[in-house]
Image (tube, rainbow, N blue to C red):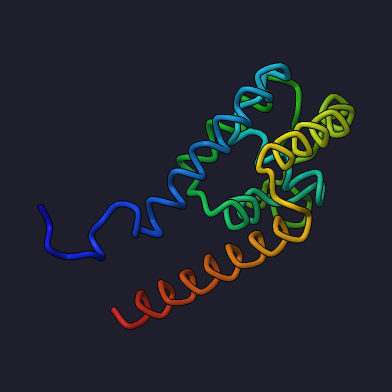
Length: 153
């Protein structure tokens, strides 16, 4: 038995975040199945519904994914007829993702999925957005610390 109180599982921020993330992701997964979407595909579509025609590098940055992880997701979205990849005329090295009509028509239905998940949290609207804001602040702070550490190395 550990003599360190800070090593108890219930005192771990990382485990609380991990557990909450797993539960929310499972809930999304069950609701997205109806639309033949995986949770990572849903995240890519969120980026594109926010701003269509985004460069793949920008999607990688927004989702904090590397190309090895993002490429198969994009391939599956292409195969499902949700996105098209296009190279820009100005610089052929830049590949952009464009939503198809099929993906655009899906957006209102997926908005309802997100509402169902938000309701399942049983948080008030104020609590929901306060938690979201705090988590975004935490993620930003940790990214900044990581960037500083990698510059120092």
